[in-house]
Amino acid sequence: MASTFLLGDRTVNRIGYGAMQLAGPGVFGPPKDRDQAVAVLREAVASGVNHIDTCDYYGPHVVNEIIREALHPYPDDLVLVTKVGARRGADGSWLPAFTPDELESAVHDNLRNLGLEAIEAVNLRVMGDGGHGLSEGTIAPQFERLAKLREQGLIRHLGISNATHKQIEEARGIAPVVCVQNHYNLAHREDDALIDTLAEAGIAYVPFFPLGGFSPIQSGTLDQVAKGLNATPMQVALAWLLQRAPNILLIPGTSSLGHLRENLAVRDLVLPAEAVKTLDGIAG
Image 1 (cartoon, one colour):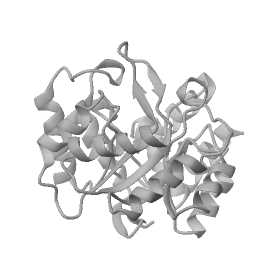
Image 2 (cartoon, one colour):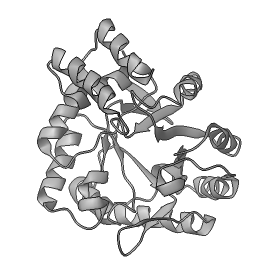
Image 3 (cartoon, helix red, strand yellow):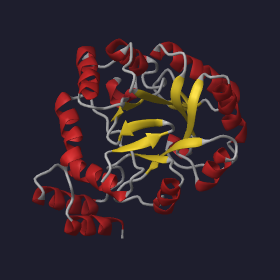
């Protein structure tokens, strides 16, 4: 099983880091322990993480500022990926910010707060029902504006998040897409065919909510497999994703050094065939 995959023209380790949990409760406001947040980022990079997923509406602004404090000037091999398409209300609510002008403004916010002249990759985050469900409709005006910023050199690569198959194909018709971020895990496998199609095209797939939406029965099965392997349920769920397809990149997030180390230990966890078969049955 390969330990790396291409994100655009950059080779990244398949276990990266998602920075969302570095903000305060509800991904809003400052963290309880900023020094701990800085330490987590520095240990992640020192341990081989070279793909960090972030966003300027985490906080808002807080997480990108912490990343800059912890890691700037950035290592040459570090790939920072952000997303645009939303903003935060004064009460912490998640609101769409999806007009082309709002997207362009968000790109500049990311550049400023991360201390970058160009962002390696920007995902267009499509806001569905409640912020997480899928929504239909064209994304052409939005993706065209991001493509223009790419032509200007402010963005090196483009991706799309929380998108339908139709929207992904629409985006690919406008500009190259190097990554797709969608909801996918052991129990939610609607993107099975899409993942395989993207793998053939050399496009990375980055699943979010690796444990989101499990029923008690499904969770029980995962717990049982994990116990038999002397691992945590999260470790087993992440290992299954790594073995599912070579183009899957993981971005587990945490504000804890202990959890960070548990997540990175998944690199050495190989699931036996019988365990994979049991886990595959969760979605049945």
